[in-house]
Amino acid sequence: MFATVCQASLLPDREPSAHREIQSVSVSCFVHATEDEEKVKTAVLALLGSDTPPDEERLEGHYGNTIVRLTWRLLGDDAWTAFQGLARVIDRLGSTERIGLQDCIDEHGALFLRFNKQSIVRGSPVLSSSDPVRVKVKPRGFMKSDPIEFYGRLVESAAR
Image 1: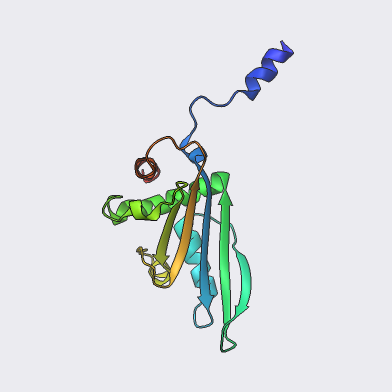
Image 2 (image 1 turned 90 degrees about the vertical axis):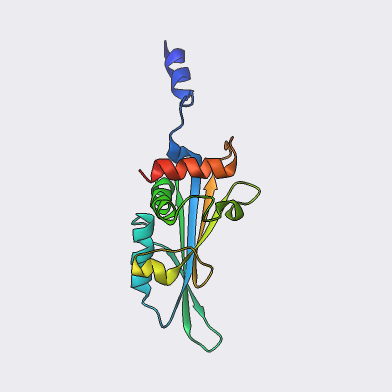
């Protein structure tokens, strides 16, 4: 009986839930001395639907100005929660084909997005490489479908 109970507890779930398909979400941006660091943090946290504080690295610009690099590394349920927030934005922006997600996926299936930081602070995020908040969504290794279909399916399910 004991062996049967132990073996049953070691079996993987038959139907992996969607959040198990996202391994991690990494987000980073620079905050310049002329920007309100707290506003940027609050806006990015709202986008991600997270309360995880970022790692902060204080840097110095060419002219001695302060630059702060904010980095969030989210795993597990935190990564799935962040992906859901990103999925709602992607869903509002339009179809995955229209916004060009196929150009944002690397050979390992990781999704790379850049949102304009000021648009996030204003509460209406747009994809842009200008003053970016960089996002990397890393899937688990078991992605079996085409990456566009994979992310399209996850965006659809997460945006509900």
